[in-house]
Length: 194
Image (cartoon, rainbow, N blue to C red; front, top):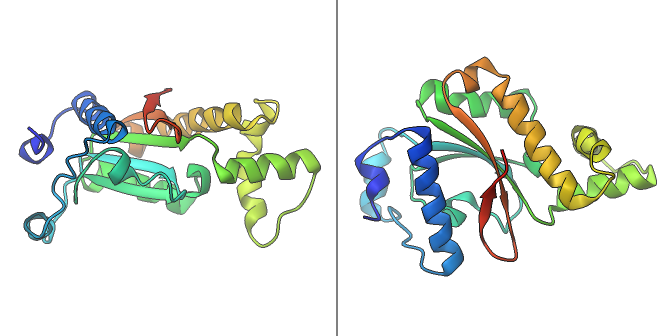
């Protein structure tokens, strides 16, 4: 039943269960790599109907389609450093439930996040990072304040904060279920945290 997502659109709970199953396959080394062929490309060429929106980090070690063992057209993926939000990112997330009727939004943080580590270091040392990186530090400062500047608790605190902000957005939460998850680089498994 590896093509079960193609056949039907279920509830947010059902979509989350499918993502969990895909993640377990990925972590076990038994990925199906579903719906990643020319036939699927042709099926979704005219329109898309993703089953979930995933807001995740830009980290190259955490590609959502791979870690959830999903295919082309299954996920609407929005990626920013440490899954930080601004108005453009929020609009991209809103697009999934509003325009594409995706029933689920997943905020996916991960172990040893480089953006969180850099922000924590800058805040601890009271350093100003170059370019536009101070915007990233400012976005992560609330999580830093609630986690004693420790990276892993900061990652989790930021997931919870992002989930809270999206749940407060009527265009997102009014049309989709918003949950938070944490991905382990060591095991390949993700766990729900909100």
